[in-house]
Image (tube, rainbow, N blue to C red; front, top):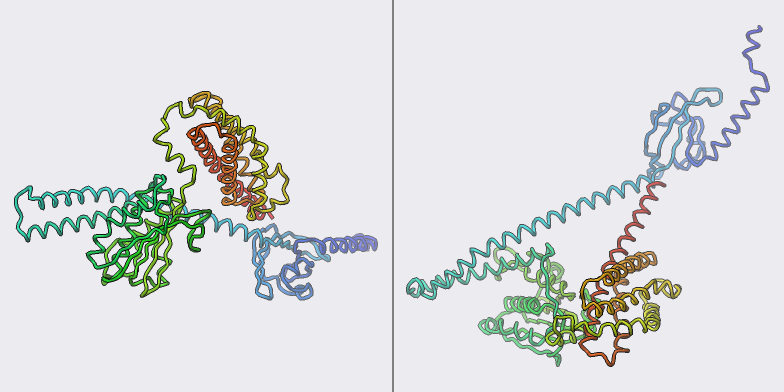
Length: 566
């Protein structure tokens, strides 16, 4: 009897255990993680409200049902919970052994990790996409390099074939009869055609490899149009096609671009028009200046010089208009097409147009004809002045004389220049929240930048353009300000387009300030100073845009890491 009495718990001890279990139940019911008590037989004895939300079922329907997943003490696993509506919740499962109501049981902790899993999956998807893009870019680069090498290799023997056919036709190796002369002529014609195709492939490979450069100068639109028309006129006349040109009173309009490449694009458009226009048809070339380009043109700013080629040919089906600028795409396809060519002419033409900061657009109607328009930037007054004075201004320290006076004037004009700059930014409708920003936030050390530009102009004059610590330090200051400026604009919500527009406004205000004070300075000196300032602005714009992009990328990565940790 004494042993039995020793094993029986005292009434106070039983009440203490019940009180402890009640407190434990209260704590478990308030925990944010789902808590489930499962007997050794796998049946749920208890579920807290968080578990009910996780499973999408009330606690009463959970208790007394099998858990359905084998659980061993000390185990950690990730499981998927299927809710009644079909939703799936990812959960992290942890298991420990406990005593519940005097019975050995297992406590299962379930933490919702759905958001974390989605973030991980998104990060993995982004990484896969990054790797795929890198591989695609590497493959494209390898293809472009191969095409460039092969095009050069093909041109050498082709030039030899054409050259020897010319010699044969000239009778260098002896006289030819009529049949031989005709055959040699066909060899030469076919060789020249093949050489043209190889040159197109070479141009495309250079564009895709980023090695095709254009020389931006200013040229008269009428001269470029006349040069292209003189090459196509004989071909059009031989096919009975009427070719006319008019420049709408703007024959002397000046554009900024590579004149040789502009002529190449225009000749290509005219060649296509001749190919697809029947005898008796007409081709018209128009040129002019407008501030309102076609809506489909990818252009910002203005005004724009345009060269428009319109034909009365067969036209292009609407479903082909979006693809004709893709490489190797032609409206006619298959072995029955009537016109030859590589399908690269329009691709190269549009890419050349965009390299020159313009565009190439098309409008067409089947049975009526097509209109292709080349858009090019109008030459600025600064570019015209610089072009006019290039021949007159010697490339020597003498051309830098007088820059110090302009630099000093720029520093004196700093306050009104900054006020005009800030006011223009406040009036730009696309700038986010600018009206709520203070003067210092909008200016953001631009005053320091402009003062440094003035100091550099003075240093260039005093040192005659020779390397010096003053010039080196001034360049470092500009780069630092530009980088910090781009990062600050990223935090304010600026985009690359907004930032580029802002630098353009600053350039315009600096030019206005210089011209306002420099009446007694020779025009050549003013043009030289503005040219130097423009180079400073272009370099700073590039640096600040890189800083803006880097800051935005870092912010996105921080968000992804925060989501992953949640």
